[in-house]
Length: 186
Ligand SMILES: CC(C)(COP(=O)(O)OP(=O)(O)OC[C@H]1O[C@@H](n2cnc3c(N)ncnc32)[C@H](O)[C@@H]1OP(=O)(O)O)[C@@H](O)C(=O)NCCC(=O)NCCS
Image (cartoon, rainbow, N blue to C red; front, side, top):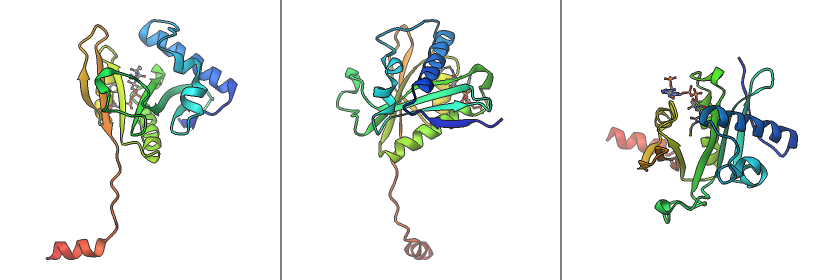
């Protein structure tokens, strides 16, 4: 099946469809509905993902045009005490709202969504990506470790929250192949 991954634009109808998908997935995976203090980014996608130049939200569509996966990336905008002075919105991006429709799991779709978001982050010169997840979510921790994230802090709280990060800084390598070949020959 062909899957089309698009960056979400400022189209009210499309945003509404994405919001419906997200709240449907939240209910399915976590068992709760809209919670104002947790879901501001969903009800206000323009400010959190669409309008800021270094933020983005990606949506995967099936061949029939159905939304089957999402992922959001935005400059680090949290004030977790533990990361004060470590992360800044200039150098650190953060991942949010990765969901894959249950019918399309273990086909590499989340990996693809993450790679699109990671490339966006690299192009915007972020040095690392932050996220947090929960050990209670089936496969989530395994997935992020496979994507190259390491655990920075295990809260050991009721929600079994785990903070993770991945460095993505690009090396600037000058193509001086001749010199390199010569050095190796010596
Ligand atoms: C976690 C989630 C995003 C994975 O999506 P997916 O499209 O199935 O992931 P991929 O197919 O790209 O998986 C890549 C690798 O991650 C690991 N992985 C993914 N799901 C896994 C699971 N349920 N159990 C163990 N490992 C898993 C595997 O190593 C997998 O590679 P493999 O299939 O070759 O073994 C999806 O299960 C989901 O939407 N879960 C609910 C929401 C959620 O937990 N989001 C992330 C929380 S921050």
